[in-house]
Image (tube, rainbow, N blue to C red; front, side, top):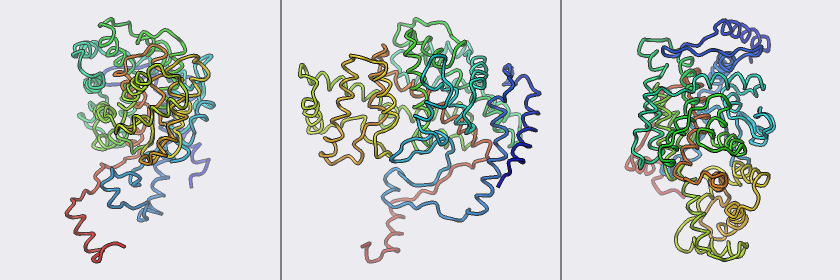
Length: 478
């Protein structure tokens, strides 16, 4: 075990050493370190590394040969669901309770994490701090981080021109992934690796790429939105507020409540443990020492799939069609129930319900529903979503083909965005991607700091599985 005296002594030495530097070199650029009497994010993270390293070393020494879990033939063919074979520190998903960010539930984050002045939702920058360090930051620490990220946020002119030259009929997620990939030219890690660096320096350069990349994503996303959906009417870059306020202003959304919604939206879309496609992809690609930009671009390609992040776009289309098909029928439980059965009996599904892990209502859905109750009145689409939520679980349970009939995060997010004027559903997954970077990139930085290995699981063929089973169970498996 690590004593408090050891932790305090090491943290003190690390903080003293790091505070002496007032600038951070980043591939030929310098960013001012915004110092206060409290340690900054990089300093806190650096102080945690040896503690975590010692903990993992002791864990491997004591239990290195012990079994975490098993994998059945069904799981091997079924997407490896529930196979315990990956370490992912920033969040943990419980089938009943839902997601915990470094041990905190969403309601706990809403209470404990710093907020914008007058706001009720946590700042994404505060969540970033929590995910990277495991600590709840102070208001001053978050404000220092916001200043640091704003200093990094300006996107190089050649990248802006590249984005604006993409074909407007190219899907926004494809543009987003390509733009992130273009930013790889700016990678601090790639430049340092090419020159030669020690393994214990990997995390430092990855940290710099992480913050710079996250800081620039709102501008990149806003460029895509304005270029594709607003006839190329690009608004000036904004880098003087928190991430969400900057983002919504560059999108052209003036309602301050939309900025508040965006704070919640980015936070709840940030992380959902490590096994989902976008998180696992970033982790996998990053394990090859691919830099932040290469890893995140790959992650976004996974997020763009209809079975992952694109689902929020699909749900909104479904809700619109559902409402249109109901026609002038009154919005009652009976009418909605009849429409749900009509959908299922036609061989279609009700999107936004069910989850690979969760077996109860997704708390990410719940917090959005609560936001709507507090801030949105008399919106027919919002009312419809809430009515479907009341009816659909019973219908799906009676239908008998859904393991989890409860609503997930995608069931509600689209109608909230539409309420505030964000009607272009093809852009929704890009906003999801901005949020997801807040989770997967801190974990990538942690992986570098802890020296995680290249991911290389063993694969089998159907014939090899069959042969193994026939040897193990010559008379069949009773």
